[in-house]
Length: 366
Image 1 (tube, rainbow, N blue to C red):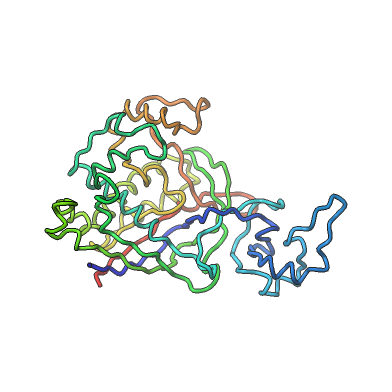
Image 2 (cartoon, helix red, strand yellow):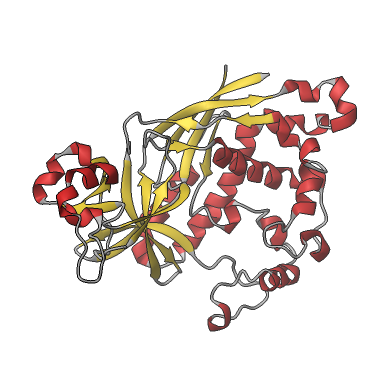
C-alpha cells in the first residue's frame, strides 16, 4: 500500500448536499441576519404549553414558537450560520450540507474520488483512444458513456483501475455547523442571473484532511494476468499532475467565458485569472468538486465535442438543452450556456461573487 496524506483547502463556496431540503420555521429560522438550525425536540419540550391547534386544526411550526429571548438559549439550536435566506416565507427551502452525527460538515471521499476519476479519464483519453460514436453512449441518461468508461478504466467494477484507489472521507472543523454559512446561488448566462436557490455552504479557506491509498498489490505480477492494470499504473503515480492538467484546461476556458460575459461578473473573472496564473507543486492541484461543478467538470468534456454534429445529436437525444424551444441550438454552439455562482446580496441587490466548489488539494506520501 502507498498511503498519501491529503490536505484540502476550499478556495470558493463549496456545497456537497446530503439530499435534504431544510424548511424555514420547521428546520431553521432567521434572526438578525443569522440562520438558526432548530433543535426541534428541545423547542417542543420547552414550548409544550403553546402547542395548541388553531381553528383549522393546524399546530404552530416550531420556529413560530420562539421569542427574541429564546435566541440566547443555545439548547434550542443545533448550530448557527452566518447569512440568511432571501425569502422570508414559511416553508422556504434551503439545501443541506452533508454532516456527521455531530452536525460537523465533512467531504465524502466519493466526492473527491469522482473528481479524480473524471480528471484521469480526460487526461488518459488519448492513451486509450476510445471511439466516440452514438452507439457507445447508449440511451440512458444515467448510464451514458458507460462503454467508453469501461474502455478507459476496465470492463466491469471488478476490473476497474480505480479499485486500486481508496479515498477516505475528509474532516475539518470540529464544532457543529463548523464554518458553514448560507449562500444564495443563481444560474448565470452571459447576460443575466436567474433561478435563485439557498444552500448551506462552506466558505473559502476552510481546511480538511484525510488519506488516499493506492493498493500496489493490484499491480503485482500475480494480479496482472487477471486485471491488466500495469500499463496505467503511471496514471495513479501522476495523480496530482493529471488532476491539475485537467483543471488548468477548464480554468482557462472558464476564464474566457467570463471575460466575454456581463461586466458585473468581474469578481469571478478575476478569480479564474488568478487560478490560471498560480504555479503549483507537482503534488498539488486545483479541483472543482460538489454542487455547481457543471457538465464539463463531470464528463469527458472536450473529447465529446470534437465531432460537433454528433455532440449536437447527443444534446438533443439526452435533452440537455434546458432552455428548449425558447433558445434553439445550432451545430457548434457553446455548451453549456450557463454557470452557477454564489451571489453577494446587498440592500436587496444580488451580484455574482464566486464560482462554486474550487479547492486546492495536496498529496504527501506518508
